[in-house]
Amino acid sequence: MRIALAAVLVLALDVELTGQSAPTTGRSTTAAASSRPSGRRGRATAGTADEREVRTRVFRQENPDVAAVVKLAAKAPRLPAPTDLIIRVRTADELYEANRTCRRGTTILLEEGLYELPRTVVIRTDGVCLRGASGDREKVILDRQGGSEGVMLAGADDVLVADLTIRNCARMGVDVKGESDTQRTRIYNVKFHNIFVRAVKGTHPAGRSTHPPDQGDNSNLPDAQFFRTRPTGGSIRYCLFVNDHRKTNPRDGFGGNYVGGIDMMGLKNWTISDNVFVGIRGRTGGGRGAIFVWVHSEDVTVERNIIVNCDNGICFGNPSGAALHMTRGVARNNFIVAGVRRAFEIVRTRDTRVDHNTVYDPMGTSALAVHFFQGAEGDQFRNNIVHGRANLQKGVVSASNFIGDCAGWFVDPAGGDLHLTPAARAAFGAARPLADLTEDFDRRRRKAAPDLGAAEYADDPADRRSGP
Image (cartoon, rainbow, N blue to C red; front, side, top):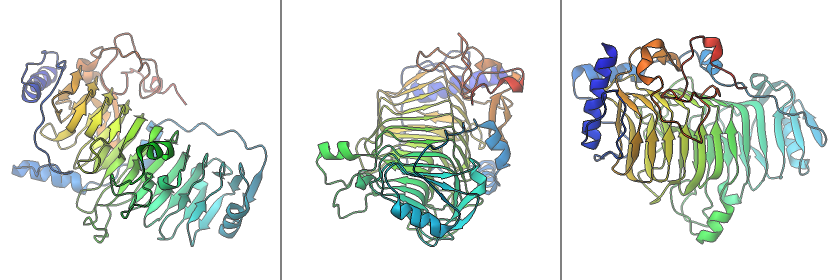
């Protein structure tokens, strides 16, 4: 009965979105979907008393067991041991001195311990690796003690920050200064804890603009220089982003909602993968995306991330600023348990693909979990599972999605585990094979007739993870 009801619901949703009937299997195979007017970042306040009660419950919910969520994600493979130009440090003073005197290609190895930082660690030397010596990110802690940024990369190429924790920053955990021509940044196996503006911020090449470089499309550089000096070839992988509670400070210019996980601008050829985000939330529910990429970004891949109890999930673009925010973006094989706003917000994009993701909106099937709007030329939305609603702008290619009531389909939605249960049989073998997406969330090879969503169904939980 559940499958039949879900199929009817998807049929109704597809009529609403496309004006055409969907097949009775519960899959959406139509070519486009129509848009409705949208607010800047908000979700309309629920109308009925029951809907308001659900929204209040979701707003107030506590974080799940973070350690249990982390176990669902791939474990970071150990980095190769450094071979030369190594400086070992044991105190904050030694860290500052090593950073001041190091040469290109130096590895600064931090021994286990707490490093209380009175000021930002500003890296200006190419090829520096700032690493915890043991490889255990929980045992090397850079504590900014409420100060501004933890680590800043200013004009330094090929920097690696890895195997440590950055916590208690008033503004940024890692600040990548795009206006300083900072290239090929790697952030690996880092825990960002209680950072209430942005855990990772990347600005764009603004030149000598009268406005800060994190305020949208204000670059006064010629296009050729902008695209030559933009942050290129970087990655953020195997990291944990967690805030223990909602932001409480209302004096941030946005009523306490100026908070996010990753906020990057002007990117080219970046990968954001295998990360976990928990509790990235604003004071009144208007926190920015756990992953937010915008302002003329191109060829950015976001895959195999887990996002739980965050106000917004994956946001490509912004309903303000640049006319085009993302070209050839890819979001695939992600688990997202939505907060009080969106799981996906795709805005002012081109040739962007959202494929094989699993979305669970705890506010139910009336909640708008996925939204494409303000331009979506060439965008595609394929092989996804959405417990909730989707609003896809006209022009978005929508194929083989299940959108509607998926109650009982997932192992533990509240805990971020969106692996499929036997009740999800409508998703089994229902996806269209995609030539460039042959592995699932667990890095298992997809079947010839793939399942919908991020992860292929496995009878034995031990079979779910075959990757690192």
